[in-house]
Length: 112
Image (cartoon, one colour):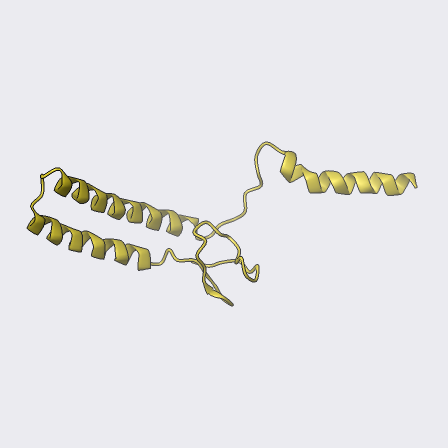
């Protein structure tokens, strides 16, 4: 009986350790660099779109200039979003979770 209690306590401490520790366990991520680079470029493209919108509203850009810049920056943003930063599961296809390591549908490790 004492051995069973000891084993139960060891198992319980093993299970609760990640929840109670100060630093969570880091999962290896092969595609982290690709995802962060794409996120950085996407954020820059979106910021450029916000800037030209603000400049048009404050009168710094004419409507003709705004249309040209908006078209250019929108195209760049779409290209960045379509680039290789998309995570996909070999079984389920592209996944919508940007920071996922494993597929939320089947549990397989995702590849960039």
